[in-house]
Image (cartoon, rainbow, N blue to C red; front, side, top):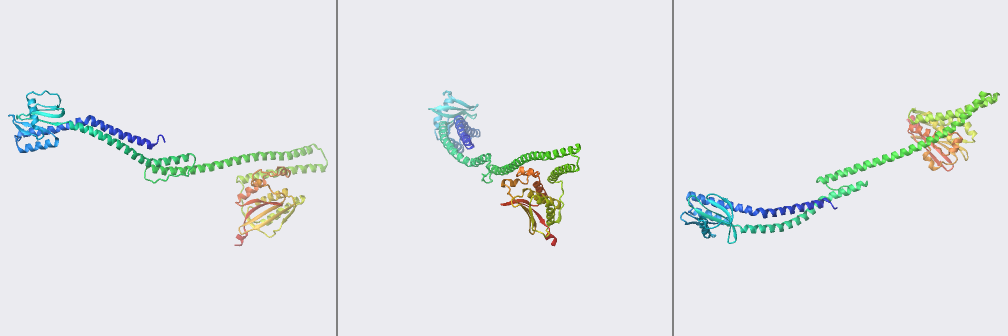
Length: 492
């Protein structure tokens, strides 16, 4: 990465190290010599204080005075010459003190011209930098009030050489330290930025809705804590997106279902309009005929009245079915659970529909004759059987047979209505229970069907929380329902 944190931190570290080394080199070059001169001046001032105190107390000729100055001269590389008021030497340092005697006379009697820089000056002494035989010194001379005269100096050449050597050494060490530090910081930052790069890869996958990758670090620092939170965020996003997709899918299904229902409703209204148009026209026409006295004979009037009543009955039946379905769908119809004999209910309906089956040449068979008691809403179950039986009559073909059978188990009773004829197309089976759906629209229109009957069956069975269904056979179709068996409970 061009602007990676690792590279930026490494460059910052190297820059700081290089800047620090350059700053040290600059300070050494500019201020170290001055600092050293001040330090040497302080040492010379300490030696001066020793000489001044000895002169004030009269101990400058003692052995203790000589030993103290010898220590100062040996430690700080100072050359000293001290003489009394009679120009006799009272102390001469072992490192060339006699050589300073002539310079002291020269200063006292104005025989030496000054060419250096005065560092510090008072009535009793002068501290200055001088050059002797090409070498630089910090030098101090003066005369005390007691008549003691002195001169001392310390060389500066060594500090200048030291500064040069120190700068060279600092440069070498600085370059080596910068390179070594750069390598070390690069390796360390590699370990630090590795989790960040891992989090970056995880976030890139999250952008593409891939939530499988998880951060595998521990819980040692802020980055690991961030990784843990990223994992939690990933799980939350995955769950939220999953729920959103599920909701979106359900919404899409609802939209499609609504569109289907709208289409079916439009089709239903069209069919109802068509179905109502004919009986209304017949009723209107025959009613006008009666009103105008087209045929005054009793037989004609009776025929006109029968047509009007028959068409009115068809419209009344259609309206009742629509009202029933509306009540069931909106939960306005109460379910009254009671114990009744399902065999007797089916037998009664077969008897009442006997004329209809005979007119269509249909043979009806029901082998079961013993009572079977079930729990349910007897009125609604009768409507289910009526719808099943009516469909069986309208679609019966082939051998022209309708078979009603009962299959009893410990908990349930299955009631089936089978009719011979053509099986239902497989693609139509899932839609049979939908409102206004018709497998064969032309045939349904022939017998006045509205596509509402099986929707009523579905609503009734679901209101009682019982199963229902349809099965295809090679020679016909079986519609069935299941009800709760009441016999075992009664016996117990």
